[in-house]
Length: 216
Image 1 (cartoon, rainbow, N blue to C red):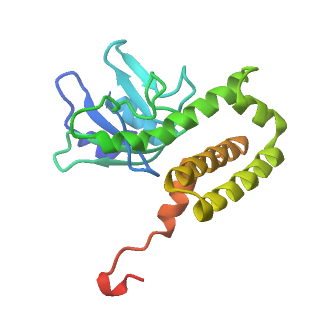
Image 2: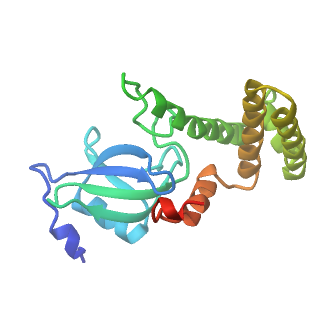
């Protein structure tokens, strides 16, 4: 039986409605696609992202070939009932290019925002190395050694970061922090976790600002 809210959607002349997809943990826009009433119904019943491919003229489950599926956590409809928003937990890059988001082409006003995609690209690279295990890859070598060795390496990188903070200049501190973050992402991957899980935890700890007087 069709959900009542799906019946209220204003589909276009081709029976389609645009769907904006965002990462529930980061808020990043991942992609824009289209859905039919059947695709929306499948989202509800399977809790996976379903769309309609205009080029192939068929229903399409995100990740059916790439394995980069999306768990749908919520579906919202705009005030005019002619657009839909999926909030998802992605299992890999949203874009077929390997980028975290399909929206990665730089314009003249988004230079700073481009840096936010770096973690997603790095995670996609780590996941690719994890699956393919190329012999000349540092990531492959560390994953083969296992979680305890990666954890030991994080301890080493943490000490180097502390030393840079106390004894060296800012550029060295930034470099050592980058090494530390990289190995933390490698550790998460070794445990089948994502940096998005860390962001979700941070978001859960966020407390709304109640005014300047309450800032500690």
